[in-house]
Length: 173
Image (cartoon, rainbow, N blue to C red; front, side, top):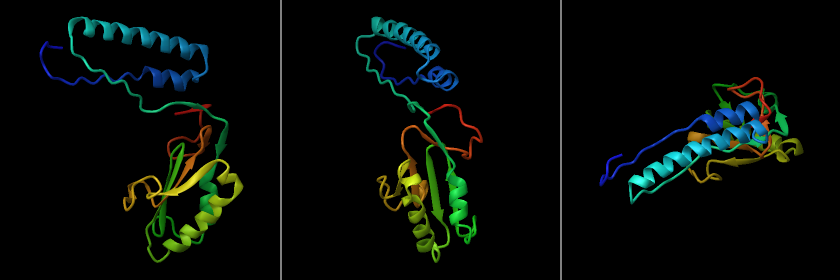
């Protein structure tokens, strides 16, 4: 880091994410690893601040972690309720651990598909574990990138299986 220069430096530390998934966030081992990371960051921070007068810092994380309380198979339920429609022709979906996204591909069937999904997601087993919304509901009106309909899992609930995992560990982030 040069003196009197305007620069931005990015440092990505994957250890917290790795250890959080490996040991779960409430474990003694995870706390120990975080303490170790904190000490290393403190050394870096002091070293740079000791040699530079005007330093601005920003520390960010890409996500938090929540203990899993409930694994929820949403895929089978959606496949069943939309069985009269063609996956890949009328609609597609994507399931990750906490968000289930649906895109309506056939505009002539969109109203019926959405109606069936609203009915499904209004059932207590869905409504008590997450929230149904749309691209407008997440502040992206007219932007279908994240789906036409989205089901957002509550903290502690994971979609399992999802498109990344057939088995889920006991924490999510």
